[in-house]
Image 1 (cartoon, rainbow, N blue to C red):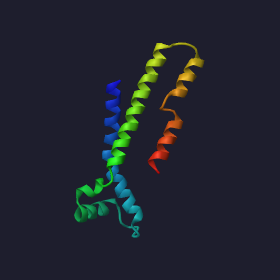
Image 2: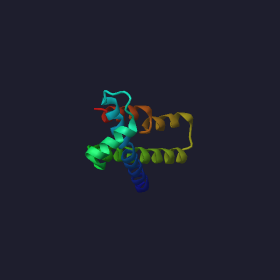
Image 3: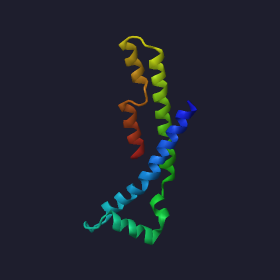
Image 4: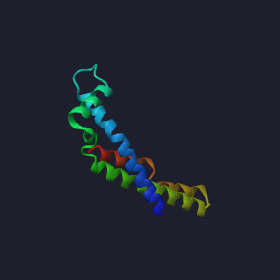
Length: 117
């Protein structure tokens, strides 16, 4: 259980650590009025004018929350698998367990709403 929580936290945090600078670049490209300017030119400008840490401004909250959300997803998935393996009963019982799984579509919709507010 603790391994799943740790693995989920590391996965979520790592994804944010890698993806956040790319998101900063994407946002700067979209805000730029000159349509011919690409990612590499904007990345160079950010590095020259603001330094490397400009790519990570405001990353603390997404870094922590992505880790927490993914740790819940990993542990929920593992618990669901264990429950399914322990209770090899009818298809009806599997549907009940499936509805309690945090990896279903409703959980992702909530995650999106929290992320984009």
